[in-house]
Structure formats: C-alpha cells, structure tokens
Image (cartoon, rainbow, N blue to C red):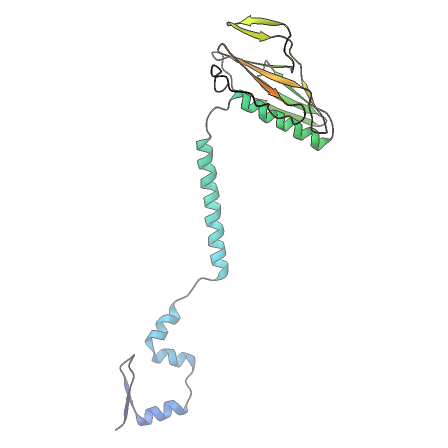
Length: 210
C-alpha cells in the first residue's frame, strides 16, 4: 500500500484518501481543523490601528502630566522681585502693542504688587514680602541726581515716578527700578527702545536676588 507522510504533523494517509483529498478542495476552516498549528495561530488576535493610536495618545497624556508636575516641583521656589519686575515690563510692552494704546506700569507700595493698567487692561503681579523682610520698590527716572535720603546706611532716591508709560510702537519712557531690602539696594535700568533690562557689569557686593 502506498502511504504519504507529513513532516510537520507526522500523520499518514492511504492512496484512496489522498486521491479524495486532491479531488475535493478543502475550505479554509477544514484546512485549519486538519492543521493544529494553523488553528493555534488563528486564535491569536493582533492590535488594530485604532487601538495602537489610542494607546499612544494615553501614553503621551500621562507623560505630559508627569513632566508638568515634575517641573512644578522643581520651580517651587520664591521668585525674586527683580525677576517679577522684568516680567511685568515685558507684559506691559506686549499689552501696549496688542491694544495699540498707551499702557502704564506702577507699583502699589501698600499691597506690594506691580499693576499694569490701560484700556480694558488690568493685570496685577504680587511681589513676595514679609514684615521681617520688608521690600521697597521705587520706579525712578533714568537719570540719577534727584533727592536722596539715608535708609539703613544706604542712599535711597526719593524722586519716585507714580507710573511708567509704554507706547503702541513698542517703546517706553526711560526709567529704572530700585529695589531695597535688608540694607541692600539694587537698580534695574530699562532700555526705552526695546523695554529690556540694560546689561551692566555685575557688582560683587550686590545681593544675588531681591
């Protein structure tokens, strides 16, 4: 008798069965039933494109939340008064450019905060200060030479400006800001054309921040 052996499944069939198999075409389901390996592979289901995209979106969302929380913890420190002042200057300039009207920047001594006012504009930027660590902020003319008084062994200028104007063309009135805290005085000069802090040589005796 003639027999045929399959290498993969180690089964045999006689010539009659082989002729019948060759004459009658098998369906895909019957072929899978005869081959256990194909039946096992058919039971495995892959991921669709929608599932893959959804998984990637969830991973990206979780990553953004974790990164934002970590950066918030890293930046959880008191902000210096001069840094807040520079931010306020840029915000005032931006508001004047956007509204095409004059915008004013002032400092509220009582509430210890910078205030930006203009047409339909009101923004406030509080400055950290404590009763034992009092901060004095003065907006002064760009040119020195006004009247001064002695405070804690330091000369503090008295010719304060109630506010500083920022114009729609991106410029501002020439001015500087003076910060006084714990017997230390520090000035930040603003360029009237760019509204950016003027770079000056560092003073080794000046404090690092206010």
